[in-house]
Each structure stands twice: as structure tokens, then as C-alpha cells.
Image (cartoon, rainbow, N blue to C red; front, side, top):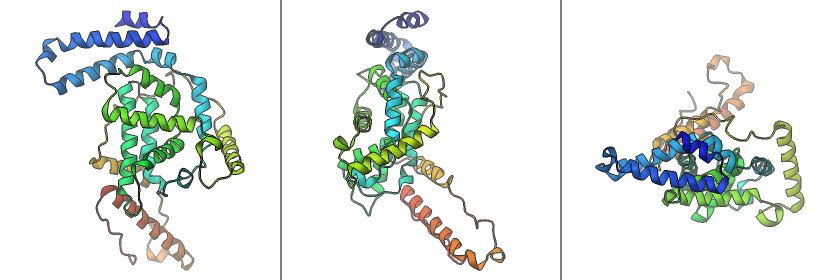
Length: 320
């Protein structure tokens, strides 16, 4: 492995990927022929193949990501997406949805840069797409179709604005072995790539946003760029020097209640109730309106949790 690492560090981009795939194919064949794998079932063997790819790509990450990535393009894309933060659902031609229902999807997408194997990066992409699909399925009072999936994913991508977006997608495209990029994994990655292509090159003439004039488009983008430049004076760091490796990502499934729990945690972590620790003796007449507002907000949160969990949650009686 050390000899291969020294060898690949001297090669150009294309030759590095070619040599990597050849090394994985040869090593995998030897691994599957060992007594530890030869008599095992296909699931066990598949886990071994994935483990091999993960071990090798993490070991070579500092070489591969730098070679395949483009820090200049990463900075351009992130700044361009920052200019689109004013975009709302109506501009993309889809029904309005509570934005905080996509918080978990955004958080998943932002984590992509923290992982160092193509499979782990793909898991958070699949999780992002599954969450978007799940939110659509839960909107019983709105009509969402398959045609709405891409616009909603574009919205999530814009709001998440993950770092090193271009380099991460290039890394996945080149490093993930072609024989392993298949099924749902390939479909969701292709869909995200379409969303990335849309946001990376969006302009008034080619993105055809609804309910916005060319002058409004330019003004909104300029205002958002001013905010971005003021809060992000330095460009993103290239390579993997600033990355913090997370625990292996957990695959979220449509039936996984943890998805709902994670969504609720993000939602509730941002909520404060100013009357939570007060009793009736502390309440002033002038605060009755605020108390009602807080009660209604709590009811809204319960209804959103109800949609996430799929069960009915009754709000507490208003007189308690």
C-alpha cells in the first residue's frame, strides 16, 4: 500500500484514477479468493469490497482530492450560490412548504465535505434526496409530483450551499468505481449533479425563474453577494487540511423513525418559549397576546412533528 501511495503521488489526474481502479480490482480479486471471503454470502463480500474501497480512498484522500478538485471553481460556485439565497419556492414553480422541514436535508448535504470516501459522500447525498422525497409525500394538502423533486432539491442545495461542491462531485465521479455507482445511488447522484449544474450556471436568462424581473434578479443577487462577502472574507480552504472526519454516516430509509427524530431535534433546538417557566401570577395583561402567539407557535411545531412522525399529537389545552 505504501509503495502504491508513493507511485500514485507522481501521476497526473487521469492516470491516478486509472491506476487506482486497477489496484482496487486486483486487490479485491485477491481478497475475495481468501478463505475468509470465498465461502461467505454475497452481502458479506459486498461489505468487504466497500470496506476495501473506503480504506484505500481515505488513505489516498490528501492526494486524490487535491488532484481532482479545483479550489478556484469551488470558490466561484459557492459565491454564486450565495447570490441566489433570496430564491423561494414560488420562483422555482413549486408549492410553498415549511422551509424548516428541509433542515435535516440541508444538514446532510453540508456534511458531504467532511467525509473522505466516495461511498460515505454518496450516503449523505442519498439521505438528502430521501428526506426531500419524504417531505413531498407528507404534504397531503399539496400536490407534488416527480417533476417537483428536482426544483425542491435545487432549493435545498441553494440554502445548504455546501463547501467544495465542485471538487466533491468530481471526487465521487472519478474515484467511485464505475461498477459500484449504480441503482438508487447513481440515480440520486445524477439528480444532484443536475441540480448543481443548474445552480452553478444560473442567470436570469437561463434559469427562467417565476415572478421576478431582470432588474429584481440583479438587485437581489447583488444584495446577497454583499452579505456573503461581508461574512466570508476568505475563500474556502482547499485540500483536506481543515476537514473534520465524522463518524460513518448512517443510511436513512423511508421507514426510519430516526429521520423524523433528527428533523425534530433541529427544529426544536431553535425554539425558545418565554412563558415556559412562568406561572399565572407572573402573567401581565399586556402579555396575553404574546402568550397566545407562543401557544399558536407551539401548535404549529406539534403539527409539523405530526407530519414527520405520521401520528396524531394533540396540543395541550389552552387553559393549562
